[in-house]
Every structure is written in structure tokens, then in C-alpha cells.
Length: 113
Image 1 (tube, rainbow, N blue to C red):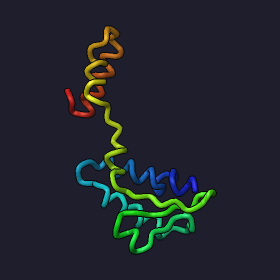
Image 2 (image 1 turned 90 degrees about the vertical axis):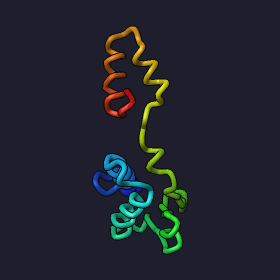
Image 3 (image 1 turned 45 degrees about the vertical axis):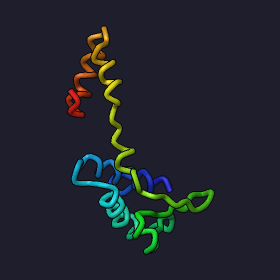
């Protein structure tokens, strides 16, 4: 089950990170489509998605404790890891030069200067 979730280049979390790095071109639908293409064709019985689930962007994983259904609504948004603007502003006003430098790097990467 861990490989299904975390495996490099094929795990669900890796696919999610790849989709988030692609930016605006990707959304929950492109994410779940990539998950289906990599996981439904794999050699695992732990992943599943019937037609009804696929039409609603859902899938199931058979964990050791049982089957769990996941909905991909909001996966992309939840994975963005953005720092709130207030936190960035607070860091940029620090008396410590190192912390201010980190704040500058963060704001440059997120475009919130």
C-alpha cells in the first residue's frame, strides 16, 4: 500500500506533486486522470475505481484495515503548501537578517512580494 501512495514516479502523492508543479494547466481532473492511468493499469489489487467512481473523480485503496474511498475534489488546492501572506509579512519584518532573507526567497517563489 505504501508503494501505491508514495512510490517515486508512480505513487499517488508523487503524481499530486508533479501535477502541482505543472501549475495552472492542472486541476483535480487532470490529477485524477493521471492517477487512473498509472494506478488502474498497474499490477496492484489495492487500487480501484469503477465507472461510477471515475465519473465523480473518486478511487478506493484497500488498506490493511479495509477499503477507503477517496474523493479528489480539492486535492490540488490542498497540496499547494503556500504560506499565508500574514506569515510572509511577519517574517520579512524580522530583526534577524537570515529570517528576512528566507522571507525574500519565499515571496519571490510565490510571487507575493
